[in-house]
Image 1 (cartoon, rainbow, N blue to C red):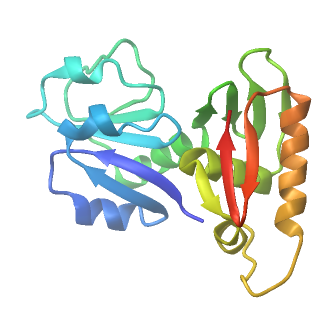
Image 2 (tube, rainbow, N blue to C red; image 1 turned 180 degrees about the vertical axis):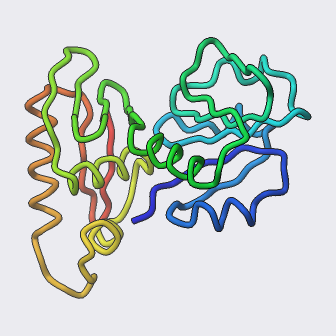
Length: 197
């Protein structure tokens, strides 16, 4: 399953980005849509050029934003997620890949960082398998999904095949969530999965 990327820019570079970042599911928006569309649990890329000088709008962006700019000495509250161009295409692609891999995903008292599941209230943590991480990350980002979607797109199991694989993964995820004493719960309702507090 492809990771999602929200891209905010004022340039007409949609075709270039679509071909460069074909490994990702892209949502491309204008810079003036940042305030209402920044997703804390998703990767956000903000492309700033000389024409987008009002930097006050960008200084409060979260750590889940990678800022790419051609402005000299861009400094936004010492953020480490700033790339200054010019960059080669490979440099850009590699930096975006590293940024997405190191993205923290949070939901209430729960944080996912790489394969570590952390309760932010009590600092308890445990480790997830790669599949468990994919399932939980997707569920946190979407808040609700169908079991069939996860079976087909994360577990790569055809919908007509009878298996308890998803239930086994969910059971292990729930046990790990109980172990770290999070308030977050995964609920099953008919063929839907929901994440709630």
